[in-house]
Amino acid sequence: MSVRLFLVLVLLCAILTACGSFAKPATSTEVPVSPSSAPTEAVAPTKQSITVFAAASLTEAFTELGKQFEAETPGAKLVFNFAGSQQLVEQLAQAAPADVFASANQAQMDAAVQAGRVAEGQPQPLVGNKLVVIFPSLNPGKLNQLQDLAHPGLKLVLADQAVPVGKYSLEFLDNASKLPEYGSSFKEDVLKNVVSYEENVRSVLAKVTLGEADAGIVYASDLISQPDQQVEVLQIPESLNVNALYSIAPVVDSQQAALARGFVDYALSPAGQELLARFGFKKVR
Image (cartoon, rainbow, N blue to C red; front, side, top):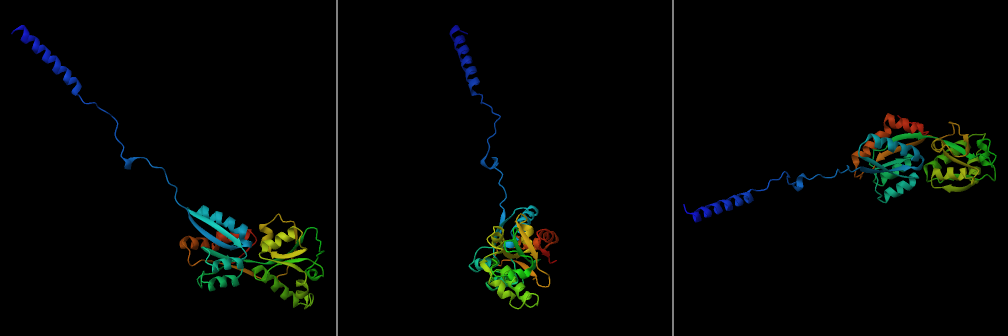
């Protein structure tokens, strides 16, 4: 072999060795992540919300009842609209969105049925209540007995007769006027002392508490629900008092019918009745 040929072969081998070192592919331990396998943020479940229309006197009791119901019903959220029962019926008649209606008397529940927002046969008794006479702690009207409500010059505040507690107050005055110890003119004389008619029972309580009136008639439950009010009480005998019967029903066009029915059932359950009794209402079951 000539020297020239030997040098050509050596050069050729060197070239092939260099090419082989560049041909080896790179390796990687990374695995591409497809969009479908990428981690996603946890999404909280959407709460189902219902709106409960309830008489003003149920404010504290239903607020607590709602908390208890939410705690025992995962995903439930309650929104309350508290007002005089007659105001709530007006709103229902104007197609206000609602899921449950709780009235302080049967008359307003009947009105909701007539308006087509509550189905006939659906309302059920919820709780009972009774009336008491209240007056400021300083007793500016010098009230010592129920007959003193008829004394000239007394400043009395009542709920309007369209409000359940207002209608109940008139029934009490009618009952008293039938007894000789009150006299047949008792109701008439008492009504002469009325300085304002309020749209709900809480307004009556507030005016007496603030000293804007010498006396008022409210529910017994208001004094338990509002224990810090600086007022004194005159009890009304059972023979003269009224049985204020509340009722409750789901609204026919509720968008959460099952949840609305669940809240109604809970309010009527032993646990619900026990809670309402702690706020001064009388159990009906």
